[in-house]
Length: 310
Image (cartoon, rainbow, N blue to C red):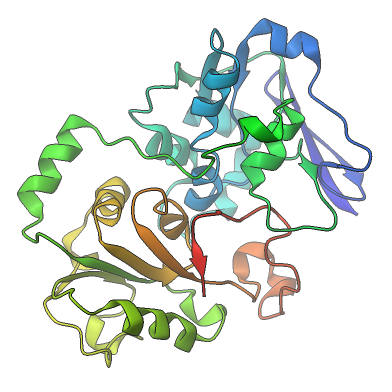
């Protein structure tokens, strides 16, 4: 059994169900009267950067199907009111979960605003239609099927990023390379598939790239990439760049390599991305699961079509 959440009048209710969402064999859909109101809130019940990144194209897709609708994102005030101390479970003490939606949806032209309250039903990521025989279906597509989208309307669902003019100016001042690759090695890189899979992908694509940006928890000389024969490495962690500045650099890279994190999932629309899969549970999944093998790592919909998983 799993905990299914309902959000009504900015209050969180929970009850036990066999699974989250509805099987395509016996689907339920969003009520017509909710769609007729044309005021939508995009919501997640998980609050990491990657969790929200997976829904970053949802405002655009909603506007395409329902051109006259208003699309809102929860502010930190709403998140704190609805989820309370649950927010403290996210971020590994490296970021505040209540501001993640503002980071992800900043400057998104399809968002009509960040709201502190809603006062009615919010249909979030637990409301989805899944295929029990196929895991590799992005969460956003499962959710939008619940929102009465047809297969033909589920095009270009990969994550969106919209830099501001200030971020655009920053990039051209900061970056000195005509072409470069981007390397990521977060603290959880050892919990994925064999790192040799990722290094093999780097080896196949490094030719012609003489410049690299690297972000990792350890210095490059101690990283998994240290013996790859790469040149001109600029290490980013010590520079104190914002999440969005890091993301801008990734979108302009010739190619991205890294383990599965929110930043890795956010890039595939703009730059070729090779991601080392996550097959082992980490602390974010619960202390009782740490170190155990994930038999169905994409079962939750944590999947982006354009990414090359290695």
